[in-house]
Length: 158
Image 1 (cartoon, rainbow, N blue to C red):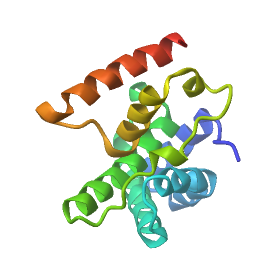
Image 2 (cartoon, rainbow, N blue to C red):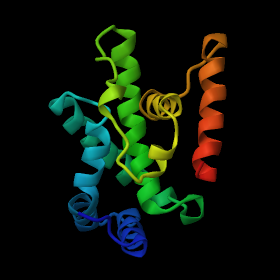
Image 3 (cartoon, one colour):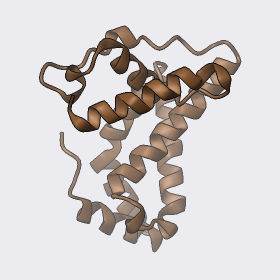
Image 4 (tube, rainbow, N blue to C red):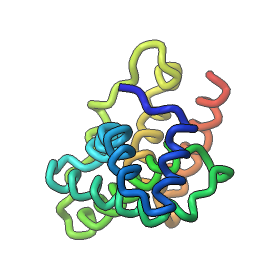
């Protein structure tokens, strides 16, 4: 399963901006499974993940008229929308004490991936930040610094 070509996605977004519901259906067919996977990695409850996927497409539909290709590729924009919805869900659930703990130890980088070159602590902080966001306040300063350093090491490939 591969994400469609960015120009195809831009065309669908342009058509959606003009109110073309067939373009929305085509977009859902093209990227729905990818966005669902993005959400499901963060939201273990299948019903919640499905609702968040629907909300994500609602947001994509309503913001299609203001989508700016210069701000990023269509897939990146849509994945960010989906990830933001999932993140909001996790934050709300955590505030109620109902969010399951993130099982970082089950997310092992595949051999040969860029993450496999990092040490375990770097991978841990990258995965936690990806799923839960950057921690705030003084208590999160160490994790934020570790995250910045891990990103630099990841970019350098060391």
